[in-house]
Image (cartoon, rainbow, N blue to C red):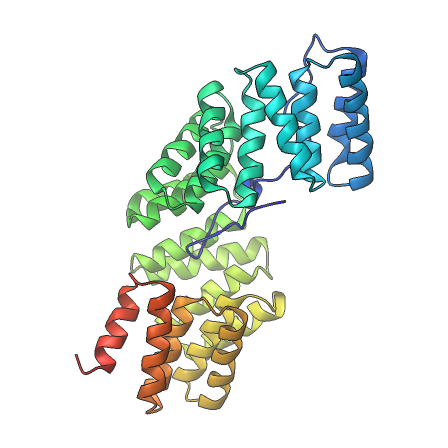
Amino acid sequence: MKLSKKIFGLALSSQVLLTLAAGPVLADDNDTAAMKKADALYKSAGNDNKKLKAAAESFRGVLRDEPSNPRAHAKLGAISAALEDDETAVLEERQAIKIDPDYYLPHAILGKIYANQGKTTEALAELQAATKLKPTSFNSHMDLGFYATQLGKVDEAIAAFKKAAELNPKDARPHINLGVMLSQQQKFPEAIKEEQEAITINKDIPEAYINLGNIYADSGDSHSAEQAFKDALKIQPNHPNALSGLGWVLGKNSDFKGDAEQQRKALKSDPGFATARRRLAEALSELGEHQEAETEFKAVLKQSPKDCTAHVEYAKFLEKQGNRDQARAECKKALEIQPESKTAQECLKKLNGG
């Protein structure tokens, strides 16, 4: 069970996904031998369902002897969620909270469960409660920041990631995510600083360089953007986001042949990467390869029918081909998906003679 990590075309650190496996807290010194054994099984289970079921049975054994053990209920709930038994998971977390209202972990796990169920109000409330009950929990602040991002609560996400960075200055992930958030506010110098800080902490995370490339490109510094994408490719030569990003920058500099080449490489690495397919269609259009461009536009819209940008770019392509009626229809589809889209609004206005 996990949430998507793709945020506004930039990448949150992949390690921030709201997952529900692997023991979230260390054993307590006062635990019984049975609880320590169950903890050990949970810690070693990873994502192996058979091992998770064995750990769950071990925690049930603990609860037969210690029915008021909130940690056992919380961990049994986490395992149940990992095994996609949400009903049991929720019941166990609620029981843990009933036994110990000040215990942060059940709230953290409930927040993840509700997030994965799409229960936005409940999820946010539980994740906020977890950070309030345990302000020193790095993971809880990271989860809150990630989910606040999903809900478009940028200021709350920034605050959560900043707190996480304070709690663990040696972890690059809060800075990677802060760079993403700040770039959405067009605070490009601050966003660049955060990604550079992430690289200072850990120079081997390609997402930091990819985000840096995107931020540089959005701020108008194509030269620095190109270098950042190339730096990401030094770490992971077939990274689809880095390949596509490099092509995107080449296209911005009118090297459409180079753009198309990089997008094809990205699609070879990840055939389902819709952004690369859209960018390939745009590059082919610029190269005058209209039939192939139309094929790629149709393919990306079939794959991602709610991609507002793809509808707008296809509309621009259709306009160039003299098909203004269909172009208008594509702009209207884009506005149905994202009514506030300025590019879609401007495109439709132009098509209407505005």
